[in-house]
Image 1 (cartoon, helix red, strand yellow):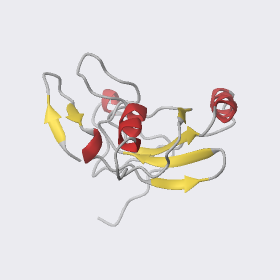
Image 2 (image 1 turned 180 degrees about the horizontal axis):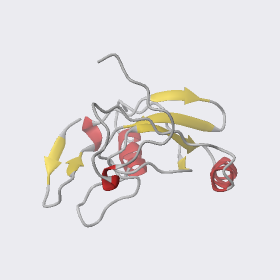
Image 3 (image 1 turned 120 degrees about the horizontal axis):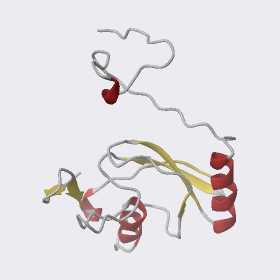
Length: 136
């Protein structure tokens, strides 16, 4: 990724410098890998474009790095600092159906983090469930 820094604590990410891999595709949706430090929505206070705006800019390039050429619809979000798998619908009907499934909790999100130690304060997060010791 290529970053520029602005007045905020978050770097600005440029469309031409970002790789957004498509890891699954069918006739209704795409699953992509969202890099960290990219907001879902455009952020006018910093000038940072959101994920869908970055994808649209990439699609307009002569040799686009994002291979799907048509409009996409966001159906759920990941926080700016979070990387992970994000689903994007290929049409408004699929987007509506998927958003409803997220709202009704028929689709479950899983979060996984790798850490060398437990959080010291509750504000840093918590461990829910069984924590398994890694190789280190």
